Length: 186
Image 1 (spheres, rainbow, N blue to C red):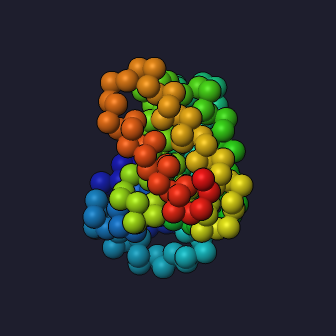
Image 2 (cartoon, rainbow, N blue to C red):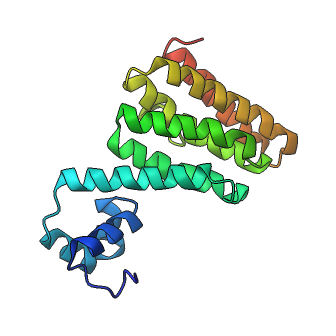
C-alpha cells in the first residue's frame, strides 16, 4: 500500500496505515496529515488500536526469532519492538520482548550489541526513565529488570571486542550501573 496516495477509507487500510506508522498517532499526523484526517474519520477505537499494536509486536517477535532475518537487522527490529512495547506498557508485551531479547543475543553482530544495550537501558537522559529496564521495574517485574540489566551490561562489555565507539559502550555501561544504583539493585 502506498501510504502517500492510498485513501484510508476502510478498516483494512486503516490498520495497514496505523502499523506502517509505528502504531503512533504522532507519526501518522506528522508524516501524512491528509491520511491521518481520513483515519480519524473512521473513528477507530483505542481498543482496536491496542489489538493492532499487539499484532505488530507479535510480528516483530516473529521476525526477530526467524533465523532467516539478517543479523544486521536484529537491532533495528528490536528497537521498533521496544517502541511498541513502551506504548502499551503491559506485562505480557514486556515478557514478549524479554524472551525475544534473550533469543537474539547470541545472533547479534558485535557492532549491534551496544545498540541493543542502549535500547534496554534507554537512550534518553536517565531522569526520563526510558528503556526496558525502567519499564520492567515500573511494572513490578523485578526478575526481568535484573535480567535486562545483566543482558545490557554483558552486551556493552562484549561490544568492546570491536570497539569502534568506546564512548558509546562506556556510556551504556555507566547508565546500566547508575540505574541499578538508583533502583537499589547493586
